[in-house]
Length: 96
Image (cartoon, rainbow, N blue to C red; front, side, top):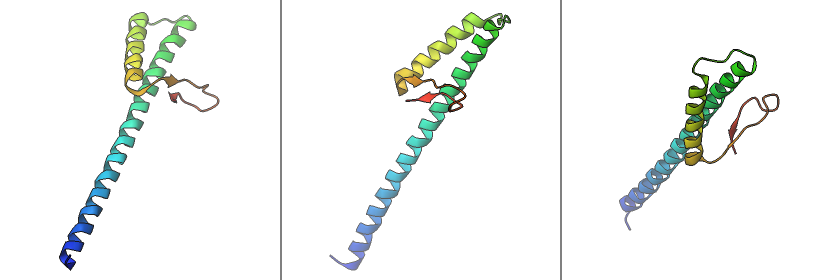
């Protein structure tokens, strides 16, 4: 194998490793974005429930709550169960 062949082989290996690292990075970004979406949905649902509990129900609260729950169920179907933790312990909700 000539020198140029070795250089080409190494360049191919480096390119493959870079592509794999890029795919791992993209997957992690997608995971973080999905978690943020779930957190936002949980926050919205919490706001709806809070409004009801303090006697200021939203006019369309039941409809909005049902829609948010449906979206959370779709999230769980794609990403697995959501674990809700106490706000004073971790500050947010997240995926197990």
